[in-house]
Image (tube, rainbow, N blue to C red; front, side, top):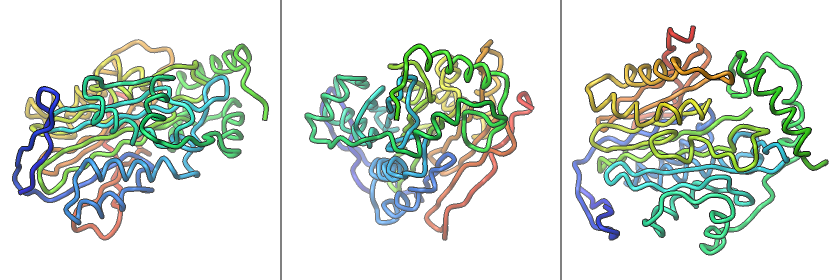
Amino acid sequence: MRPLRQLVDGALTSVCTMTTSPVIIGSERSEAGLALGMDILRRGGSALDAVEATIRKCEDNRDDVFLGTGGLPNAQGVVELDASIMVGSTRAFGAVGALQHYPNPISIARRVMEVLPQHCLLVGEGAALFAAEQGFETAELLTEYSRRRYYEGLQPTDRSLEGENTKAVDGDERYRLSALELVARLGPPEGMYGTVNVIALDQYGELVTGVSTSGYPWKYPGRVGDSSLPGCGNYADSRYGAAACTGRGELSMRVGGARSVVEGLKQGRSPVDACLAMLRDAATLPDPFRAELRTLCLTPDGRHAAASGQTTATYNVLTATSVGVETYPRTVDDVHR
């Protein structure tokens, strides 16, 4: 057994847990970093280190235009990043939102949790000030590739802004038209959104979940989605499980998506039923910009599941005995079919 850090009255103390078999799971495109995370877990490292390292690797992937360097910008052509991380044993949480110029928001979110335990979330200029104080380096986040995708995405298409092999629905087209109006009004400079979720269970029984995204492209400047909010895009409770969401963040915020999934696990639902119950709740809400919403979860005994509204959705898994990233179909919610 290994001591885990626990936040009590502003101080970190230690607790011990039983040894378990490590597992790490992630949403679409997490495969860019999952092997690194599992390597940390296999060497006896913490779930916290594994989640941060996995997501950092994804944030640095220039081929991914949905987070980190190369993320798709807002309606003014500026890349703003959201990220959060949560520790299941203590429910300690750190997040940043609408962060500009810093390529690895997941690491800054972790530093908020550890260095500023009196706070959970920093946004905008305050988040950037904190990142500078902590010695993080700035970078140019808008790449030529993401700039091109930004303008191409304003053209009519049958693909969802979700960008993850997803068909467009009416809400996607309404959002595209509203984005055109914002771009025309706010004026981006000359010259598909999607979130990465990662959940890890280490051999000491700790569950940690992390989320990172550049959010909706063409969003109103300063918009912060569910990825920065505890209980919405991200939630972990080592007694019951951890969950994360991707897709239509405003829907996840309105139903408390990730917390809802964990609450389902607490009530005794299976992982897949807990995921489906949240999606079905979200489906009851009126939303003229409705688009794909997805979720995934991992339990303290290593069970996992994911759900979506379309048959093309997948998620990724690595266990201690995996020889490579295993990709599974997400269970489709019949309400969305």
